[in-house]
Image (tube, rainbow, N blue to C red; front, side, top):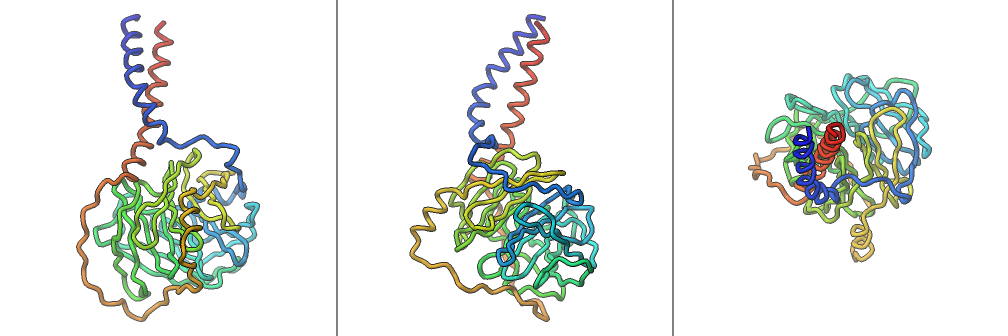
Length: 339
């Protein structure tokens, strides 16, 4: 028994430096600066898989993911449901919600088995909660490199839609500037993405786009889609949502589950400094994509094979760190039982 305990102790000592090296990449513990903005306690919302901010009406929108009917929930600043928007469709797996220029987008893009021929983004102009079920409009999209799972949608300052896939070699896919409601639109892979992105949101005043993973928030440039900042996020059981606070000064991150807390976290300092030092004023107008009667002609594009950049490797290390820590805990328990 002592020989077994000795082997356990040696193994734990070997793994300890590795876990210390990875610890910096793991989700951080909540601090005093991480304020609980609100708690989503409505019993109808048990898998909040996205958040969006409607600045004009001072409210948020959220959705449940797979298994729910066609609906979105309007929330006030305290997280209380003020109404629902129901529509006459049977979505497969809505995973993201976005709001831009008076238009609400609901992204039915979840595909855990990577088998869907196309995904759908529903949209609603002048979205308002109502007791009546309403009609909808939608765009269908297909990937240039085959089906894949996704949970993130964002809209840039010009109203262009982007879908971010959720996989170890994730990618950022741009929709056509003027997608068609007739037929299926082909997405274009424009950049690599961090591993396992679960939501995304465009930041105010052209500061970039925030991509969240289970362990971090990654800020990417609007034009080149290059990483400009990265910060760890507080641990959440299943962190799958991110949006901008109503005052535009911070980020809100949420998790699936009943009575889920939405935390307020700071926008990384690098982003604020870059924004304050920029001589380029923010854009005053935005152009929401307008439906066209036919899909725009486009030439097939070749996609370069994805590479594992620093952001992707960092996220993979973060996810692996938790497994290492859990293993060490198990070894220590075994040691104590063997004494």
